[in-house]
Image (cartoon, rainbow, N blue to C red; front, top):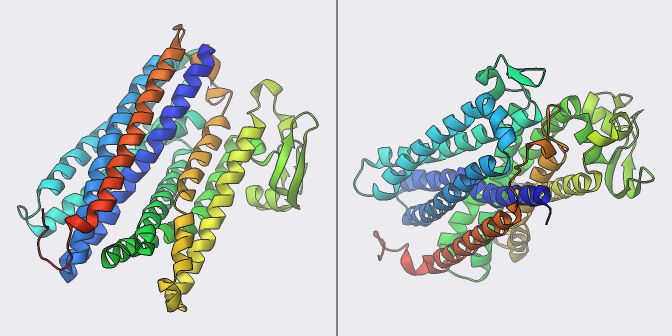
Length: 442
């Protein structure tokens, strides 16, 4: 395997795994804290049981997120030494702050997990909220560092030198807000639908109905509200990309020719040789309107980008279509759920609605991975957009392919271990917790 390809595959594989662990770790503490809040307010033991069950999941994902995140930090130096040599002093601030947030999260989680019946009840609940807030901040800070790669700022690049470094300006670059917003909402969507889907499965199996129905409702509310907000954050993000990275937008839409009244392309198979998109649905003028606010606005195509600076069109376009398609499917399910809550109460007890949530279980994470692919592949061939090419940043160390195989094994092992632990947690919950008692059986 080519060393350059191995380095890119290893980073992609590592990020692909870590992003799932990280998003669940960011969001689950809020589910847990809301259930805990209801327990303190109502004293209904089912809320306490849900809280304790979810806290075990939070602990599992905190541990795996920490391991996979630590591996990534080593990989940045191992695989991309030229990149870190120049970029480290510029965008190091969000990484250092992320470390601080991580330590706060770890301390708060320790208080939370071991604070039952030892701390003031509301202080104990507050430590859970701190776990969620610090985890969310950790994610936002990491995304700010990635946003800098898409929108480099906070330095002057003169004669190959990085001068006049301003780490604050680098952290709050032009892309950080739109990326952080889109990623945060995506974390709630993906985790919410995954958790709701798992509990929907248990309800359909008739196991511990009261427990799983309570958990399902909390997760479903988070998921459906976030799903309806996601298109708004996506619109903000797309407008920002159109302004800063026209090549990425052109690849996302497989938009080969600069034109006014540009159509929005839905689906289709890009043909880069003929510069056409076959079998696509085209909505005239909509892409122009979405990116410029004017149906006759000009949208830059790939023909305005030098060939050596163009991203891979097929991968970016397919990933973008998958993300948008699954996102809209989840919006549709969210609207159905809201209709059930508002007008069709009998739907809430119907198996068909639960089965739709079961089908949606993986959708959020597939969309999440597709969106991350758009962000990273759509930036190519740059590792720092417009400044440093990915090929110039890779390690010169030979035999990096063996590192790829090793780290791939580590992540697959993590995935298997987490799956086994979660399966055990979910299947044992009915035995461990008895909602009719005031204390856990064990």
